[in-house]
Image (cartoon, rainbow, N blue to C red; front, side, top):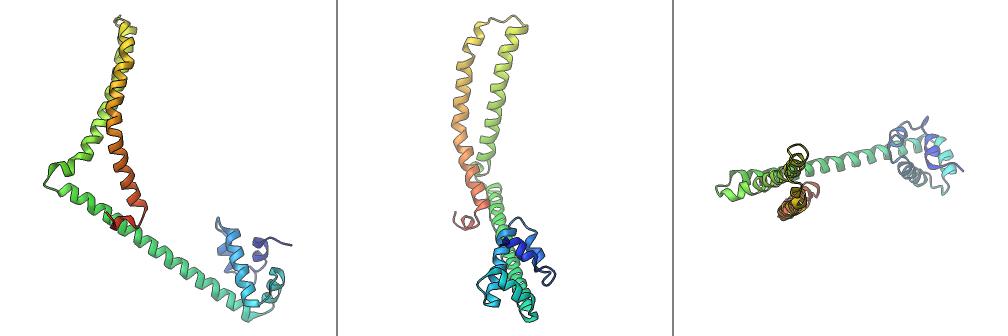
Amino acid sequence: MMDAVSLVMSLANVVPAVLQWLGHENAAGNAAQILSTVRDITGEKHDEAAIKMLRNNPTMVQALTAALYRHQEALMEMETRATISRENNAAAVNQTMQVEVSALHWPTYSWRPFIGFCFGATAICSSLTVAMCYLGVMFFQADSQTLSVLPGMIGAEAGIMATMSPVLGIASWFRGKMQVNQDMAGHR
């Protein structure tokens, strides 16, 4: 017994339209759907018998070709609707950002960049603290006791970063979720 893709490939010389359905990553799923359509058209329960019957009947070949084109049209409509939905969602997110930017109340348009810049500045400050402590001890004969207080200093800076992280994370998570989930854009 042949697998679904091989069976459908055997139809390619009679119904060339099947080839476009087998060139995708879901070739096996598409082949199974095509075989189901072939069984429906021919009335046969077994795939090989259905294919043999279809190959010998031009009317059934036309019916399969028409079914494949109808399926392709339906897929194109779904893709068009998905594209429009993605564009509408992007427009809603863009509108939200435009409202934030054009707001007269300065905290509305400045809180996210402010938190982001503070987070970046704290990360740079933390890195510079470590570098300056080690460079001071290694090259400038600074007291090595400086390195013993370094974990406390880094811990304090990490605490500051941990305070900002939830704000940035939650804002980014909801923004990303709005961009991915088409239904959420209208439910703010």
